[in-house]
Image (cartoon, rainbow, N blue to C red):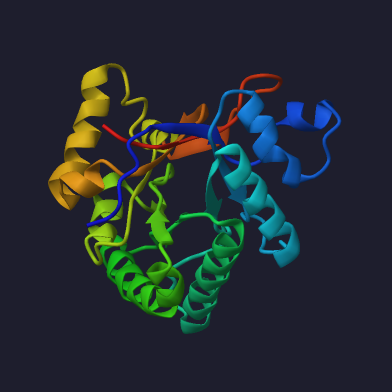
Length: 253
């Protein structure tokens, strides 16, 4: 059974512009800045590449522990577990391993990642992603044993692997996997689906039905404003000043 935090936690994915506008320059200062704003979670972004130095990461982790900030990591965007090219899949596995290592330095407990491309054959893409994820789980096993969880994310474009059903199917491969539910992505993918509490409840019920009550209480989540077309997500609408661009929640209900 996974340990369950009894509190819903809120914070940004990445550093808000107002952080820099107030004169801060280093992510080492983010945990205190978030604490002073009344927030308690922080997702460190490795989306453009894993260039974080171990010493810096450990300092961020120390500050997060000091100020009561729960850490997570977002792995590189270019991960594609469903690639039909062996070399690309191997690189994707290594990106996950490196992200898990960075998460350990940061004292983070979760690594969020995008499953990959749906390609021309969605069924084949999902089966390929499953096999690759199993390999990633094996190679990340030392970090998983240390409490780090891999968290595949729901996606917002029709040509991406990662609708709600696909993410939940991936998570059924191993009990250590937790879904990242990006409500903005799902809203875009399904052309504005979230219009009432019933729409949100249906997602929560689907998670619990697929993964059980305990993991149903522990999923990761993103909220963001997303422009969309018939093909799904077009653009994330950035917000400045005191409104945080992307909100992540370590969900508990």
